[in-house]
Image (cartoon, rainbow, N blue to C red; front, side, top):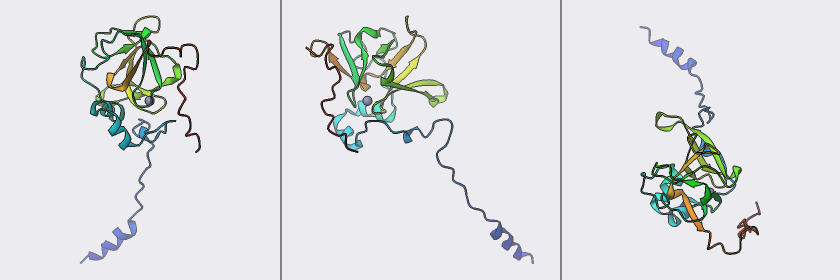
Length: 184
Ligand SMILES: [Zn+2]
């Protein structure tokens, strides 16, 4: 009988090292914090299902279905979640892709770009720097002078027509009216 070998197994037991989220692939990107965040419940009420899916679950709307794909009005495109100004209509161009496309940003820091390895390909994801909402992707096949193509979901965007922003040109463009939440 050699049943006593069980002892060996017991003494050999070792603590299982569950590694915290430290994958180099950026798989734990949700841990990153953004300057602005909104409760999930509020967003679900405020956004349409499509807007919620694209911005919060990194979805992609079907080509040619978005409301802004063929929008040629002058104005400012904003983040639909936090209202941050992202693109000027002057940088919008018809890429033929079926999604609103821009060749430049209003401000370099308004969008955060990260590597995206989903669906077995490498793309560059464009994210709102304020609230972390998924916007779309950035490609290098855009027109001059930047050569960039920000391929953005309509569902991620809001739009402020130029006419509506009557006298805010050159003045206090930043809409920091609701800045009352500065206490930490
Ligand atoms: Zn945002």
